Figure (cartoon, rainbow, N blue to C red):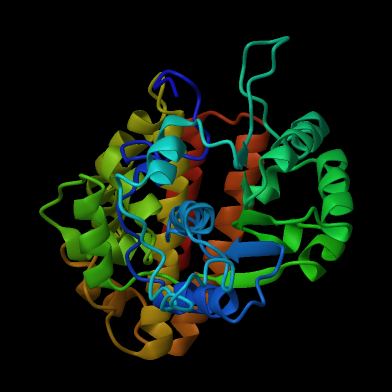
Length: 371
């Protein structure tokens, strides 16, 4: 597969999930799938859910390799009886199935994700019905080959209504020897009839230790892994985004501005607003809005719990939050502030409000709340 091809299912700065050597954490989900496989109760549709960046796509690719490389229970008993049941999903990287999947040439595998619109040359914002209907041709052709077939949809949330309805027909009448894996960040957005016809594997946030291990595997280097883990809330994907865009430094600036309240450090606030308004800074602006929400959430939790959140995600964060939210009443005020700021930010982005004005409006709201 060309490295130049758009890959909407890949986090920038990280290997594609098909290239990830090992799934870190998520032992419960792996065991649940293995139990279903070895007991002969393998469901035809699997919904892999959980927060973004915790390994859902990596698990889906691991399951695909496993199913295509592992005989079904009872299918290969041989002269000396059935082989011992598999204890993990891992398949050797030099296995023919693994090498074919990596090269995009495995005949028993079909991958659905957002594709380039041939009329515009741009990546479509959604998975369309045409993408799902092409699956029928794959199923018809691969039926003559025999063996297992795996379909991976990443992410199912991105299907439009027509694509979802086309998939639903397949789930209602599942093709023989075919397993459909769907990655979903927001399963509530899917049709209830799709959810009801799938078995769910729910993945959770990674621990700080697992985060550090996963970031090392992804080739990310940071001298503040604990701070990155605290801000990313157990999501490797979010941690990589923070690292790529200088998120730790931006968050430290936010904490510095909050630390100046109620007497706002205006020059510092203006520098932050000017940086957000620079040409090509759209991604950083989106990250800044996210980090405002993260800071206020951590601030409100500090007040509600009556103690600092550890580890700190920036220098002086704990002292600043304990001063601004010394009790539950202050925590409620900051939580209300977070809701209002979030609504303003969404409206401002929708109407293309000047980024600098949007940031300053947010900072002045923080000042009013701290007063």
